[in-house]
Structures are given as C-alpha cells and as structure tokens.
Amino acid sequence: MIRQFITAGVLALAFIAPVADAAGTVELTVKSLQEVQVTDKNGKITKKTVPVAKVVPGDEVIYVISYANKGKQPADNVVITNPVPAPVAFRAGTSAAAGATDTVSVDGGKTFGKLEALAVPGADGKPRAATGADVTHVQWKLNAPVKAGASGSVSYRVVIE
Amino acid sequence: MRRQGGAPRSRVSQPPQYLRRNLLVAALLSLACQWPGYARAIGTDAGTSIVNTATASFDVAGLPGTPVSAVDTFLVDEILDVAVVADDATYVNATSPGTNAALAFTVTNTGNGPEPYRLVVDGSLAGDNFDPQNLRIYLDNGDGVFGAGTDTLYVLDGNNPLLVADASRRVFVVADTPAALAAGAIGLVQLTATAQTGSGAPGTVFAGAGENGVDAVAGSSTASDDAQNGYLVAQVTTTLVKSQAVDDHAGGSLPASGSTITYTLTFTVSGVGSIGDVLVADTIPADTTYVPGSMTLNGLPLTDATGDDEGRFTGTRIEVRPGGGTLVAPTVQVITFDTDIN
Image (cartoon, each protein chain N blue to C red):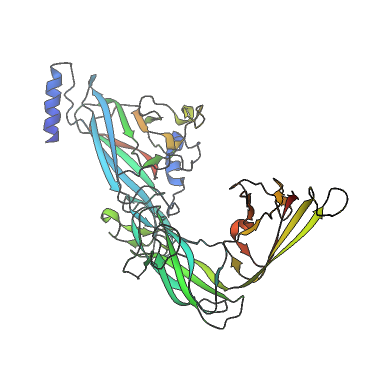
C-alpha cells in the first residue's frame, strides 16, 4: 500500500521535475535497543544489547538506524536525519557512523554542525556551548555511495528524561 | 503525553568529548552503561510513548530519490518510589494518660506514575520508654492540621491515598498515651508507606502492573519508605514575674511626673516538653505613656510594628510572642519596656 502511494507520488512528480525512479531503492529501519547485564551460570557478568524491554527515566536507549539499498543502482548522497524524540536527551559523543560524517542540530534542524562548535542561548541571554541535552537532530552524511545490495547502520544513545 | 511543565533538558551527565569517529567501536564498547538506571526519582511519565522517526534522502543516477522514513516506538515503564518524612520538628507533647495526640508526616510519590500507597504504623519500637496505644492514621483534608472530625480515618487497602507523580499527602499518626508515665517518657512510632503495586529491591519488576499496562519497576527507594517520630510525656510549668525600676532622670528613683519606669517581665518555662501559643501581654498603666521603641526580648530590641518581629505595641498594651509562640522547656524569656509617668 505504502509503496503504491510512493509510486504514485513519484509518477506525479515526474511531470514537474526529473526524478529518478527510485521507489524501493533505499530501505530504512529504526531499532530501539538497550544494554542489559547478563549473568551466566558461572556468575560472570557480561553486557548484552537487546531490544528495549524495560525503560524508566534515567535509563539509556541506543537508537540504531539501518539502511539497505534494495535497488539495482547505487544510492548517492545518502543523508539520514533523526529528530531526537522529545522525552529523551542525546548523549554527547555517542553518535556512531562508520563511513559517514555525523553532525547535530541544536536549532530544530535548521543548521547542523559538530556539537563542540555549536552554541545555544544561555540562561543569561548570552550564548553558551551546546551540550548533548540541547541536541534536536542528529544527521549522518554517508561518505560513499551505497552500492546495490549493500547495507549499513548508524547509531546514537539517549537517556530517558 | 509529555510531562507538562517538566524541567529543561539539562540533566544528563555528559560523557567525554574525546569519543570521535575513529574510536567508534571502542566508544560503543566502553561507554559506561547506566544500568541499573533507577536513581532518578522523577521524569517522563510512566506509559509515555516515545516515538522515533528517522528519514533518509538520496540520489540515484544523479536524480533525487523519494525520501524514506522509518519509525520505532516504545513505552516508558513505571518506576515505583516513595519518600516519607516526619514533619514535626520535635517530639510531640502528650499527657499521661492522654488521647489523640497527633504526629504529622508527608508521603511523596517520587516515582513517575500515579500510585496508591499502603500505610502502616508501628508503635512497638525499641529504644523508647512506652508504646503509644490505639494507633490510627488519618489522611489530611488539605489544611495541614489534624482534626478527627475533618480528616479521614485511613483503613489499610480501604482508602490507600492515590498520588500522581511528584504529589504529596500529609498524613497524621494519632495515638493515646498510657497512664502513670513519668514526665520525659518517650514513645516512638514509625510510619511506613509502600507502593500498592509492590515493593522490592531496586529493579524488581511487576510485569504489566504500570500505567497503560507498562511494567512497573521498584526504584531506588525499594518502593517503600518510612520515618519515625515520637510522643514526649510533657510536664511543663510556667511562671511570669513582673518587676519595675524607676529613673527620675536626676540620679534617683523618685516616681514623679517625667520619670521613666522600666518594666521587666520574666517568663520561665520549666519541666519537659514544649508549649505553644505563647503570648505575653502587658497593658500600659494609667497615667503613664509607653516610650516608643523601648521593647526588648532577651536583650534585643523589638519594633512596635505588627508582623516584623516577635513583639508589637497595640496602642494600649505591648504583646510579645517569644519563639514565635512556641517554647521548649526549660527556657527563660525576658521582656522589658519603658513608660513615662505623665
């Protein structure tokens, strides 16, 4: 059903501007994970990443955004953007993106940059250095095209407020 | 669904900034996990749905493809926590025998969802002189003051007080005192509040028992907390002694027109216990005039105005409420003021 809508949209757009017949080319999935401690029968404790089962304020959640090229041609200039959900706070330094350039926004997605270089209005009205809690969007620009059949993922961590 | 009026997003501790991309794998492995992360007492409401939508744009063969998006959603579980504090600054006076002495406590829901709390009072504690009798718990009607006729008698699991996240309720422990106790005898009580859903070591899960069917999890308080206070068999006696000294401003003490009389009121509280609503008042004698600003309490000046300190002059008499009206025995309070003979 959704794909039909997308196809219809692409056809409609085709009359206005040239658009690639890209339906079904890139597929995206979002997974919410968390780390849990697992104790084996010898009493050894290891950390394991599992789908979110139990989260309360203060807990950490790992968002993993996976992409896959299901088409027959490479996907170029892939940009993944993820607005940080309202009741969670971005953990600075946790954006993981092998083969991608990651930036964040602290102004609702208008501008992006490295967190260290961004500032927000402070309580006194003067700009202060932005922190993870100020982040509104996380963005990854893949450094190379995604070949047909290829896939990968990016991730970041948040804390439930 | 979002917590209304919540704190700004500034409460997250920051991991080191050195975790850059070339250290990604190491970063993922080494980042300290916050498990178990139940330390936070308040936060996003239980049952809140957290929806995350990511989008991707891309080009194919030099032309823009239709952006795609994906969503994942989870619900915030309920953390069960509670805090109990005793509100009276000291032991509360009781008589021997006595009835219906009230101790005030406040129960606060420090979790993130609405929760009824079971209340239990224990009067058989060690380390005191007597066990308070006929223990009852009353739920305050909102005025903060105990009244057997105005507050609601609590019945375990009959009317467990329901508190939304961060809300508090004043409750009173009310007891009788046995006869023949010596002055100074202390009887301790302990009030315990426990989440009705359950309690246990932090992290204990009550599957599906939370708001909107989420799991409920015992928080750092173990979903149970208690506080103690006690009754003190009081025996307080008070005396008020008035003396005067005359200064005729000529080196003598002749009570003549123009002479100043300094009155000294000595209020002595002895025994054990405390007294409240203390008001020491003295009417200015006929044919004399109060000397403005001459009032003192324990050597410190008091103003004549109402409301700015413990004393005032009403136009006909001085009024002093030492200690704001509450005094703990033993204590001596000395008040002076001057009048001029007309």
